[in-house]
Amino acid sequence: MVSWTLTSFFSWMDYSEHERRQVLDVIDMFNEQDTRDELGIGTVRDAFADMLFPGTSTIQTRARYFLFVPWTYLELERLKVPSNQIAARARREEVAVIEALAQSEDQEGIIGIQARAALKRLPSNVYWQGLGRWGIRLFAGSQDQYHRSLDVFYGRTNRRQRNDDGEPFDGAIPKNWHAGLPPRPEGFPKEASFSLSKLEAEYFRERIMARAPGALLAFLVEQGEVFVRVPFPWEHHLVSKLPAHNREQLQHARNFSETIHGAALLYNLMLAELAGLKDLSDEYNQRLQDWALRLAERVDVLSEWDRRRFWEIVFSSGARIPIPTRRFIDAWLDLVLIGDVGRNARSASLNDDARQLIHERERSLKHGQARLDNRRALEIWNGAAGTAQLNYRWRVAQTILLDILAGLKGGDDRA
Image (cartoon, rainbow, N blue to C red; front, side, top):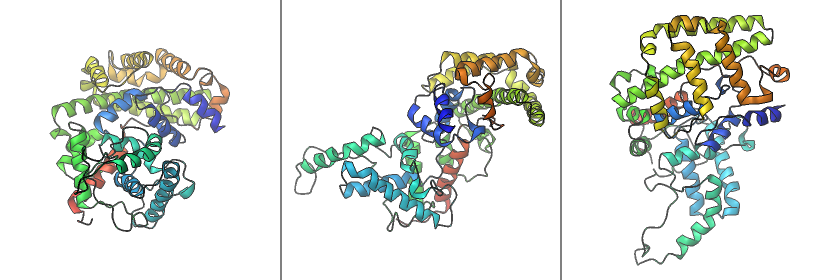
């Protein structure tokens, strides 16, 4: 059943420029129905997420994994573990980290805490792209390519002719990892925790500032203020102090998140009605009315929303937005925003044009597996598909930020 669903899902998924990473993220989150991209707007969502919180991904958990991974590989490189053994040796080391973290006081966010040695996707794979984005990983290829490159890497470094000081005559020895990494702690990986030392937190701050200048992530880590968790980044208490470009990005991201949420709720209402689930239909009707009230509270801002500028910002990130995706989004926003915003939102559940738009969008994405057309596909719907409001990876980003900020404020100076 699951394999059939995955196959149909990937046949219509709306890819971004980080296709491979995001497909793997989707596999890991497949059972989290409320976060799935049912209407194919993921390229826009990811454009803002990459802009605001570069280097993060939906299934990252804690900041110190950005150190666990290079510490593991640097030690294996020191031992010159060959290419045909590196994946297995690294797996053993990563499982040892899981076991150590399971014995620590802070167990929130342990990747693989249930599966342990049977874990399919290791933290190194989850964090690989982010390590490159932050300039911690210098090797430019995939993790598999890195593994295959090591025999050549060892041979190249061994053959370099050196002077009396041990330095190569023709320049620095090539490295796969950033030279400024904090030292690997004694006892690692058999001893591990998520607590960052001050040195480690300062290293992260330097990497983020150097590799993501101008991002909201960089602004918040530079400010150094520990904050109370909030559901969305636009609710952060420092929003009023943001540089103008960050405020503009966040305003457009918020407008899109709040307006497109109604499309996801209407889609699920239509599914509930088709399935004959009255209580669930009533629930989605109520959620749509609540959504309409939220939009009505921001009617002044939404009525003046410069959607041309919205698309300029999205495309400035380098995102590739398929033409059908843009047409769908524009059509939905026209239905909601042209005229009386509050009235449009309140009547969205009864609007034939809105329902037809949702139906045609699902059909164009999923073809024969569209739930609104395929009874069997409808039967495996669990009652909530893609209903979560977009937060642009803020849940993950704020956890990583709070780890770093705690280290800056109260971390010790251990090596």
